Length: 537
Ligand code: GLN
Image 1 (cartoon, protein in one colour):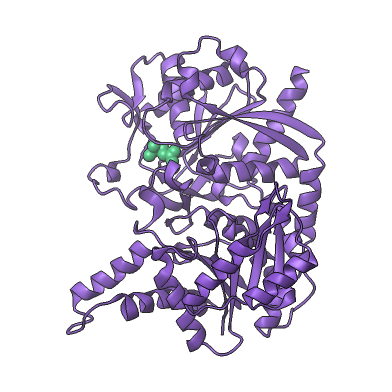
Image 2 (spheres, helix red, strand yellow; image 1 turned 135 degrees about the horizontal axis):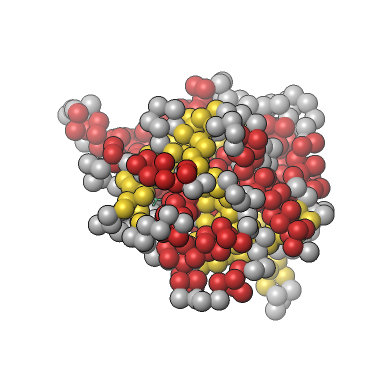
């Protein structure tokens, strides 16, 4: 029988509910429990797959091909266990299910309403993970208490508490304690209002987690406990941290895991086992090396657009005891620049990011040409590999009009072309090549040494691919296909033989990098950057 922790947010958005959920889950996991996390998002899109990265940050893809909220990336990076479609549900998906059932006649004769039909579907989805044998399921409710969209979710968790047995649920409310610098005071009133708002939906929080820029003292804790009706030890400080990976240890110090276990009437199986985590943090904070990596993309205005790439660098930096300065470079800014070497010469590695459409693409080719000819470690991900293919075709194979048909549908030399099974598809939602696919690695390659394996599984999200008609020509000039999908023969990894480290991948390795399992390609790329820097000096 699973137990449930429901996390709501108050006062403002962006308080880091996902990180608190992931940190609590990590602590409970470290005490021997089987834990999973799910997120319910109150928007009407069926999934975030059709959202522009500026709207909602990166779209995180799971093994089973679900396009999900980026918080699921945090859940995987912290817990080191894969998430699935069931871990992320939106209002759109809930309504879609209910409306499909209505059309099928499942509610024949009845008026279909928010209560009970929508709330029943929400509760059914909330309990789905319960069948999978988890001890504790942490459920994050997206949005902020007071939002109209959140109401059906709050009603559902209120009902669930009634339906489950005593001590099976905990309501955790994450809130903000703002600091007024003029008054030099932390203020509790917004939290009191937020709890009051939550009470109007029939929910009394059991635990308050308080985001704050300054430590909250005993008096403030007492005041919050008194006015918000929570126990004194259940007012938890969540002070701003240097790194998101500090948060589990900060929560451990505050005793959040113990409080939650006590409320669920669960006994810890053992003391928290966090050795790997602590080692990772120690390395992260005391680097021996330092490198500059250029992250060349076009969605830099919103850092969340490349969330998993930034995090994969944190993991790879820590294992290599290397501080990584990531410079976000707009590919558009390189397009009309002649002085490319001057602009990029301080970099020890260049990563071309995933992306869609043609904006800034010429700037990517320029950066790739520089990395290829100057021996700078180069890592191309998805559109990054596709751009390297076009650059190589144009400048080495001298196919001047070589292009991806995504950028130039009329090109006579489509070195990157839409996959045949994609050609008839017009619907945009959930129709890309999505999820985990096998890839067979050639043994005489750099990536074979890096992975230490000739069969890997990586996650995809794209419509275009290398055009195998050009394979011979590419390979005879040293740009080799070294990883291939065993059933479709699609090229998944290419590397340049005459270069110290030039690797392009059609998949998204960043999605599988976790604290405890940093991704081997990122780890190796950083090693190459360190070597490049040393050679330069
Ligand atoms: N736009 C390219 C495609 O669909 C690349 C996608 C990506 O980088 N994720 O194939």
